[in-house]
Amino acid sequence: MKILLAGLALVPGLALAHGGPATASGASSHAPISVMGDHTHKQGEWMLSYRYMQMNMDGNLDGSDGISTRQITGTMMAPGKYMVAPEKMTMTMHMLGAMYAPSDDLTLMVMLPWVSTEMDHVTRMGAAFTTETEGVGDVKISGLVNVYQSPDGGHKVHLNLGLSVPTGSIDERDDTPAMANAKLPYSMQLGSGSVDLMPGVTYRGFDNHYSWGLQARATLPTGENDNDYQLGNRYGVTGWMARSLSHALSVSLGLQYQYWNEIDGARADLNPMMVPTADPNAYGGQRGDLSVGLNYLFEKGALKGHRLALEYSQPVYQRLDGPQMEAESTLTLGWQYAF
Image (cartoon, rainbow, N blue to C red):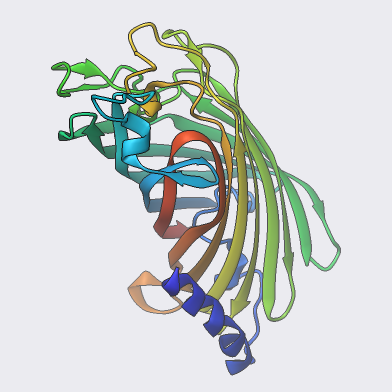
């Protein structure tokens, strides 16, 4: 949190330190790197991208209150609801993306993720163990449709019409103290196992020094997967403002709110009393995140036109249907190149 607050404190000073222009072609013309599908392209344009994302979780919440490992598992003399408690989780994602505009009004986008997850646990007896998964996640395919642009180009709106294809495995296994090659809980799987609709809308605004935007999106599974469950609907709203320090460099602030439902149905081969991550009722919740970011656009040399970006976020509000793991921080690094 200290890093985030320091970044927030610096932004007003940075905004006054340079009077250079910000235009739709500069560094601030793109949203913070964690925002997907934030802009469209002109007919015939391509854009390739790569994102590295790392999300860290530490401890557990029940509602907005912290709950300890011992409260989750209890003891042999006074057993708790679950036999195992998750303590830490790191989720890492490498995301390759491509965008192409067959017309000025339509931009097509595809995103291919590679996901790896590591979760530390403690049993009621005090034994520690770690489970891991790694592989291709669910591929995302979207069409970005322009619906409004003001005469001066300072305000734009487009629809995000997406589809998540179930290419990620939902049958991942790993060794645990109770069983070798055990089926892992829902949050350790690589995909949803279902076709998910991903509707949304994005607004962007520009002036001579700032850019800003607002995006509302949802992920809506269309039915149960072949393991007899369906991930809950997820809704999110993201707002951001960027200040161009020069044509090549911008700094941004962002605020995101997410709300998601619990899992519907359950796997027959998972015991919901074993660990909270195997309990479908311990998955709903809501969270608000605050972020700071940098975008840099190379303007000369061999890297002309390439963009590099960084964003760091931390939760400022969490209320979880727990026990559920508490988000701690998310770091996103990215590269983009349009031609």
